[in-house]
Length: 415
Image 1 (cartoon, rainbow, N blue to C red):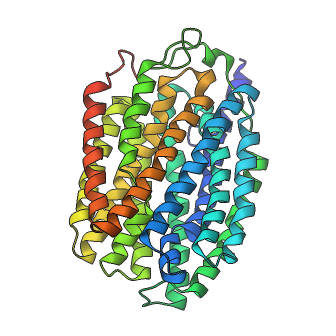
Image 2: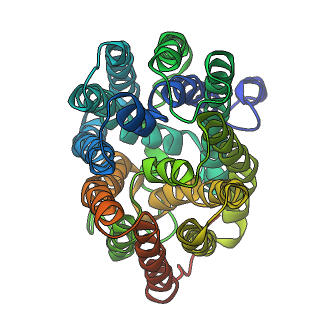
Image 3: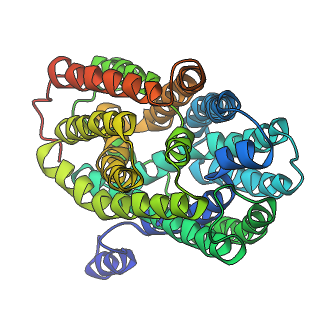
């Protein structure tokens, strides 16, 4: 490469990364502004506006997540075959954008489920190719940081979206314990705008980087060459341990219901979610960068330990102030684990199989959210609101031990 070409490549980088990392972060930021405004308070819509139950909330959260998992599996595999990550991402983001306005017409919980279904179908199509495109756009030495930046920008959108929702709630029902239909209607109307902008950014500013031929033959940390076997035993074990963890990781809709169960008003719940996302943003990039230095496994183990303690806290909490602390700590867990867990997938598989690998990873997580969420709803209604959190804390602790003692460290340096 000539000196001029090297300078040109260097000038294209944003925050030391390929522009795709930044612009996909912008796309996720804008999408999350929309999604947080429209879908985060769905459990309150179902119970407060549509007179549904906790079990209905579990069905909506679990069934929609599991449904999109099926599409994540196939879209990841398709992106490996056609080498068109961006095309599938555009289709997925575009479909979700078309579905969201129909929340204005939903007047029974089944209607909410249908719209949520459509939104998650779009997410299922886009997520695996998008994550593979991020992995394709960064080297192993910066992979954790790259995913950390993406998760931080994604979550910054959640902060903005929830702040906007809080302003709407404060304006229309500042002291309401139950969410009003009028307040939610305005959240949907305003939330559609950033979703349209996200699709425009994706179409115009993200490039189809494609697989780097030299990268496909380079052994990544812990991976087995593609000619020997598609996936390493370490990757399969990682999926198995992740599946066990996810069985106790029900939809986050239940932490919202738990806050309301402890007499937190709608504005308070929304602001708790803002705090959750702020701590998520604050920890994502440092955690990703740290994983590049000390290894992904250590960070995930720490994150799952925090999760177990936080879920135990949700079970034992008996005051509103405790919920504020727990929401903040829950954001720390997400910041540590979400980006690092995705970067770990890329470490364990050949580059040309990343799309398929992300499909399996998201598929395992998504498919198990249905039984996890339905079980949580059943435990909530038949035993107590604290019981789903005891259950989740226990499984998380066992999964952490499995990762710690069964998942051997690679002899190769992660970064």
